[in-house]
Length: 625
Image (tube, rainbow, N blue to C red):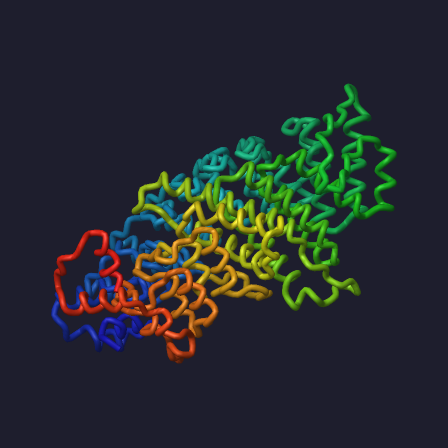
């Protein structure tokens, strides 16, 4: 271990004596280099402040002249915080004495992390009142928002720190400030379920504004299931109108069904909403219902108070009512709308009702496609759930029974249906990223969607239909649509390269189709995939097959039969044979069968001529060997 690591460990662990042994005898320049060096992304001072070692921090600042503003990466509650200054670390961890030391030493009280979080916000997050008070008294700006537009007041409300909320409001914090998504402190308070904080906010002029989803704090309390908050707010007639009261009661009833599994409680809430609709004048009837949806089993929202009682005899109809009500009130754009549709589908799958699950999940996926931007994590999650479900139904696990019912094999038409939607997501994702400068593109989301799509394709090709059949044609048309997009994920790998790489496996619980996949590679090649394409490291699909350890012989043969060169070199000058591990090339292929005179001639030219004078049309062929 080098001296830099020793210094880092001593500071991290609070070993002042050991730290002095490492540093006291060194000259100023060497000490400066050691205390400013980062190990695991953090300096010694950052780690001393993170872990509360006052004496170590004091020594580093006063004796070693450590930079009190130099940020580092630290972990809080399993999350890595990038660009955290020492003061932020001390405030977040609740080390009051260290906060005061750093401020006395000249630390900037409004310094921020990469997400624009200030030390004050960090202290508000975990309820460190003494630190909050001290920082504000020393110039901390209570209105600096983080990258999402959340202020210190908002986070204190969300975390339920009433004492900090009172203090910030006393210091004139804006109770109606909005975040990027339009929520206010009152929304955060409603989501938390803190009635005491809600009352304080209202006393300080908090308004019932709507966020970007059209949600009031009242609806937020309803969708999260905080009955006491809903009851209190609907009693505030000066703040909440009749329609808002009705919507809140109906939405809370839907939450009772799906989140609390309390159908009797839901019925009582829906009856209260009906009374609000029909007991006063003018009558506020429910809006004209949209066309019935197959995914909801063509359920229509009940408008007759007497019909509510009949729902208790039909739990499934009650569950559909909850989904219909939630979609009407929240709209398709709200995350909870599609979330609970997917949740209900998962419950059906657990009960062995796979057809109902697939129908609901497709409805949610279509909703996400119509509302969300390409590659949205929610859409990714939906596609991944389909991949897992279909893997389970296709694999040996799926041949078992659930609650006495045998799991049916997935219908090919359902696989094709979802695969085509995944292909569209890949296409739109690629188009979106092409509008972003190359240096700013993050390919992680596109890579994940592409791999999930390939997993679905792998399941489709698990049992390829006989040639000259409609299913065979449909399958290859669908895969052709994916190939022609030519989307590339991480390391510049296209669909064929990912299909030949073990790293592409994403569905681990039900391995009905594992990568590398010879049958998927064959289908991709048949529909036009380029066997010679290379990733950023110069690897072809054949190189990646060799790196899979072990390399499936069927895959290598498929690639070579499609024109791959056995002696092609990657960016490191390695051939297929050189990359094999614990395998002889003769265990995988017959090398003589795939060695041509042209390849041998190219290798001789590369070996004996530094700048060969060859025709342009042969140059690329020679250079690949």
